[in-house]
Length: 213
Image (cartoon, rainbow, N blue to C red; front, side, top):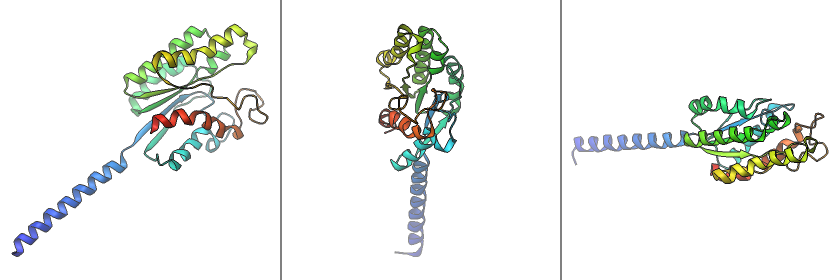
């Protein structure tokens, strides 16, 4: 084989290697986005940011081989379903998420907002997430019994009702195993302590994992 042919073959081979490496690089750099739209329970209220369940989630993703997932935490302390609904279109456009955690409603309930209003806001958020091509995860809440049995039952029923209606993944009660345990709630009786953050993650992880994988 002459020198020209050998050189040509070497050039073709090197070009192939370069193209293959570019494909591999693009695949490895591909990112998926998890957007969290929540209130103080997800905004690290009263705890250090690196102790909060969202920070623990980042470590859990890495340990589970899900490093391609980028976590965007758009949670705000005091947020309501109305505020979340107003912010959601911009958040969806900016982040183009694949999965959206909707962790809202607690502040609405504590302020005595009508259950139908809360339900309508959450329903619209689910619809907008689906319209954006993402999968929603609805996080259920309950409120203290001193609001009256009728209201507390109506409020708690919002989340499973929406999950059935929209066939949406649901965390039944975000504060399960926390709200009635010593040392797991801050002095205000509303917000989990740093010690409770791992339980928050444990409560949400089974449903979240199925969406991420």
